[in-house]
Image 1 (cartoon, rainbow, N blue to C red):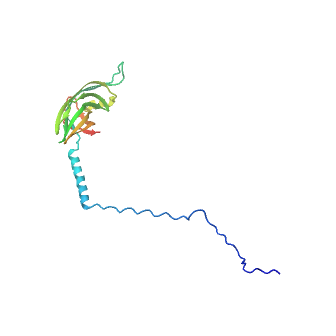
Image 2 (tube, helix red, strand yellow):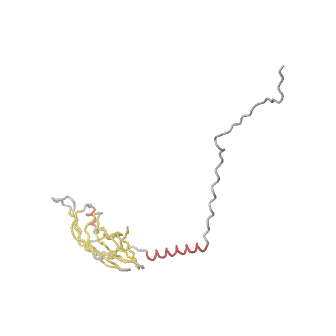
Image 3 (tube, rainbow, N blue to C red):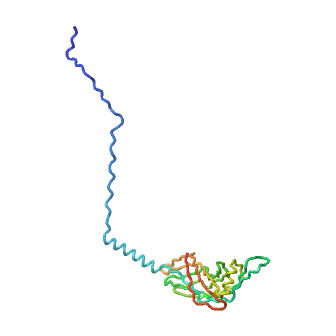
Length: 224
């Protein structure tokens, strides 16, 4: 009969499973806190406010102001529309004789104005007729000049003959005198500062009677 041997222990063996996927994931660290904002001292605030006020004052003193244009007087000596068809064209022909005195004023105290080009032209019912150069090439500070503009001639005009007849019957012709120029400004500071190639466009709305001088008419000037 067999007997169990002494010193022998019967049991279960333990198996150990080792993971090869690496260490367990951990949550990312929180982002660093932003640095505290530096508060401006009252002295720095006062300095910045002073610089801003000084810059605004300098801009107000030296900023170029728009030139002013007006029609001192204008006389329409002749204004006629020929609607008779010719062998060359069926377009009506407008005959005109307009003389105007254009007042141009530089209101700036520290800015001189050079006119690279300055001319006047007439407009009736949206149609431009005639043009004349204005003899003004330079204006010093706070200076006004009177320039004559004489528009005489004939030109084709696509105007409404019935509207022209009504204006002729009433005896008042709504004519617009357009003043156009290329302006160069010179700021008088420690060194000359030029602003070139700026266009100025003046619109002067006139109500003219034949052979009657008009009064003073201020014009609307647009810089662009």
